[in-house]
Image (cartoon, rainbow, N blue to C red; front, top):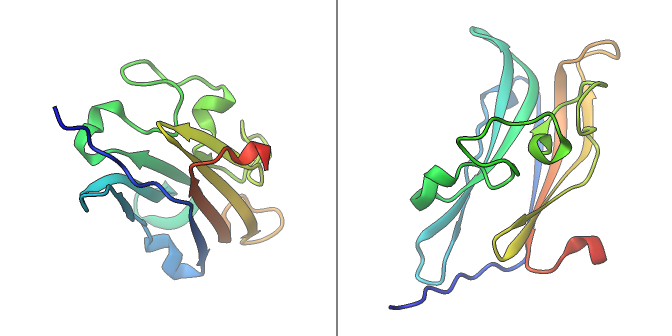
Length: 152
């Protein structure tokens, strides 16, 4: 049986999502293995106010393996078919600006994914107005690294 090696170097992606155009964004870059095959797919998808309304309430971050979709989102501790809890380990993938969010929006999120780490950090954000819960813009940094970032 041939063992497949995966190349996971340190990768840094910085996203600046702003203005009306960002309401249409759904980013889905992929990470490739040594053979050039897609291995993981990262997506940032908006959670909207409602159907027909482009205003964004929050963002959901997913990291999946396209060949093993049954494993679900690697950024969620609880795996299907178990229901998600309201614990931080099951909600860290949700970038929610609400003051009542389980994980504060500006918190650094570190996920151990198989043989590497995924770090997500909202660097900055701006609301439509000070009293609004709706986002106008957000600057998100995503880093994939083989070293544990909590020890740096």
